[in-house]
Each structure stands twice: as C-alpha cells, then as structure tokens.
Image 1 (tube, rainbow, N blue to C red):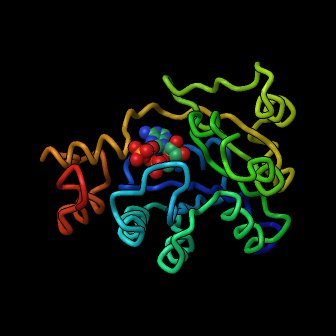
Image 2 (cartoon, rainbow, N blue to C red):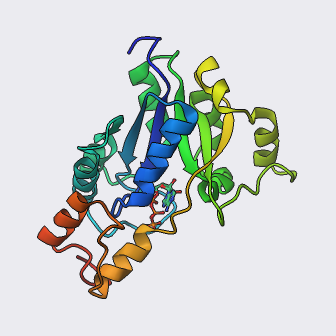
Length: 226
Ligand code: ATP
C-alpha cells in the first residue's frame, strides 16, 4: 500500500450478528474522521466474553453480505480463517500488528471503538502497545459518553496525553485518541438474538441481506445453540 493511501478505519467485533448500529458507526466514522475506508474484522475467538452463538464463518458471511453494497467498507476474513485452525483467543494487538505489516509503517490506521469498549481498554491484552500501532477513535452517543480522562488511572493519563482531533489522524500513522459523536441507535446483537429466540422480527435492525441469511439458515432460533 502506498504512503499516500488515506487513513484506514478498523472495526473489530463479534458481529453475532452484524446490525445497522455497526453500519452507522462505520459510515459516520468515515465522514467524521475523513477515513479512506473502513475494514470490518470479525473476531475468530473473541477474548473477554462468552463464545459467540454463530460460528466464525457464519458471522463473516453475514458481514460480507451486509458490506457488498456499502461503498468504502470491506471485510477482513483473516481472524475467522485463523480461528478455524486455532482455538486461541484473537487479540486486537495481534490484529493491529498484522494490519500494520500489511499496510506499511506510514499509513494512518484508526481503531474504531465504542466509548464502553474504550473505558475497559486496560483489561485488554498488551493494551499499551495499541497506541504505537494505530490511532484510536472513540465513538460517543447519548447514553454512551466518554467517562475517561479526569481520573488517575493509566488510561486517564494516556487519554490526556494523546487526545486530539480528526485532523491529527493523517499527520501520523498512530498514537492519537480522537473522540467523535455518532447517531444514537440503541441496538445490540444481544437484543437481536433475544428477539429471534422469541420468534420476533428483526427487520430493519439488521440489513436485509443479513435478515435473509438468518432466515435461510434459521440462526438464533433458540436461546442456546442455533
Ligand atoms: P453484543 O450485544 O453481542 O455484545 P454488539 O452489538 O455490541 O454485540 P459487537 O460485535 O460486540 O456488537 O460490536 C462491535 C463494535 O460495534 C464495538 O466497538 C461496539 O461498541 C460497536 N457497537 C455495537 N453496537 C453499536 C451501536 N448500536 N451503535 C454504535 N456502535 C455500536
């Protein structure tokens, strides 16, 4: 990838299933932060949470279908492919090391996180290394504001030292923390799975290609298993 390539947003997640909150996050991040592209990275074996309901290739298939008609967004299958061979947890630091090697030392990489995820960053594997590998853009929305920066934790100190604005993202390949506001959509994959298990509609909470896939494969029909 050339040095001139614009900033690349990275949206990791379980996507169990992908929903329109994820799509709006990517669209609004692209606009607010001036990103050239947003790369969705479905986790193979997510760390720090219960195992996903749908198998990794199924979650990837839903992401690919949802992004097929969304300009400037792509799906990265690497973690899902690795997970089929290896049950070890996938960590964001490893994702960023891989993407940094793939895109070269100069390209601005921007890890997109919700404010809740950012507030828990200190529990992540090798979290301090993340700042050397990418910028972090923190999406805030009403009810999910940023509550970091005023305290005396290591994360508060990093936030105070690194906080910046969207314009800073293209000035360096990594190292800034940039909050940005997005439209509030109170949608979660958990709530979607619960609706499906109760036989309720999730139309317009997930994009139509994802709904078709869920119905065709009869996913999430029971509270346990699929
Ligand atoms: P679950 O309910 O299973 O925990 P989720 O809906 O939070 O899932 P994830 O795949 O864990 O989905 O989320 C991936 C990323 O998308 C995270 O950074 C999360 O903060 C963000 N995100 C999830 N839902 C929304 C939403 N409604 N609006 C904005 N961002 C969201």
